[in-house]
Image 1 (cartoon, rainbow, N blue to C red):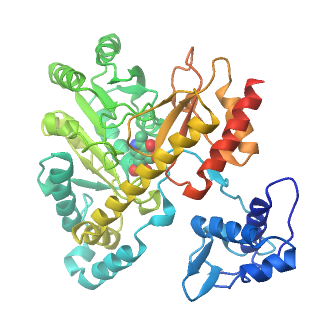
Image 2 (tube, rainbow, N blue to C red; image 1 turned 135 degrees about the horizontal axis):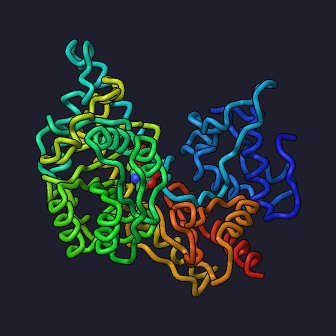
Length: 461
Ligand SMILES: Cc1ncc(COP(=O)(O)O)c(C=O)c1O
């Protein structure tokens, strides 16, 4: 028997689980056909509906591939965790079945064909100059493509020579922080809450993170000015387009106040533009860098628009802060030139824009479906955050421990992140979860939220 079904859960879920295990441990290999639904239903004594539901879920997840005329097969490109296990392999760490973690984009919809074409173009057209002595600031073709994109999508007008290609936002932050440290900075004002990795790399470079609160209008700039006076910090790291994880956009009056502050103290603002392409209710607001090119360094990345595995980002240093430019090349190594050339081809050939257009539609619909599911299973709990990005914030009932809910959810195979993970000052914060929808299959959304609701009600008991 190819699979056996365990009791204690809906039968189609149990069948999905059993099939996933069969793929994972190599009983079913990439490309293998799975039995016709009618035959498997008969063999297992199940209704055909159960089998088609299970196959449907696995197709949506990318484990199976259903092509008209070719029958249903195990996907040729399956997840790395699905490689057949050899006897000596350590146990496979499975991704949770219901991944509501924030920040992971939809990995099933990568523009693979466009990427293959872009790699082909890069390999076919790389010049000896591209390959011989790579510029540590990036290959000219990608810097040009990024400068053009920044002008059109972020109202950021820069010379291609000014753009530095990085390995991602964290790498850009590392380079900036080292530059600032070398120029005498000792601290950086950071949003609280915020993504720990950027503050951590700043701290590793010698800049002490100083927390500044955030509210529904974004960073509290009055509090920032007070913290700057108290500590002498003259650098700030912010997410103005879509504060992570609160989900607010920095309002215009605060943008102006922030820039005034930076100009008045010969300071620098680092803008993490991580989510700017994903706004679903309106056109994205222009980057803060557009308002103050003299003071603002911009960090961007392909990690959310494509995947972290691309390992490519960009950095635009501020025009009038020589300190932020000085050390950008220290230990810097750009991503491999051929990879950068392929990224350039993807951007300038239109493949990236086409991907973003369809990704926006998909995320907009998935976000709407998530809100419906939250209202159905967890009615009355506050859901906050703009119609943007890849996550929302779910407030929990007072007194419920967010970490406990996350643990109970994990037991139900659901990943959610307690909001406290992102806070520096965790005292007296209302309990909340950061709920991502980037990498969740639409067909599983309702079930994921139902399981989360069960975890919340168990924690509230
Ligand atoms: C707030 C924020 N900024 C930036 C990034 C992207 O970072 P990187 O380009 O280093 O992968 C992420 C990724 O999770 C993020 O959450």
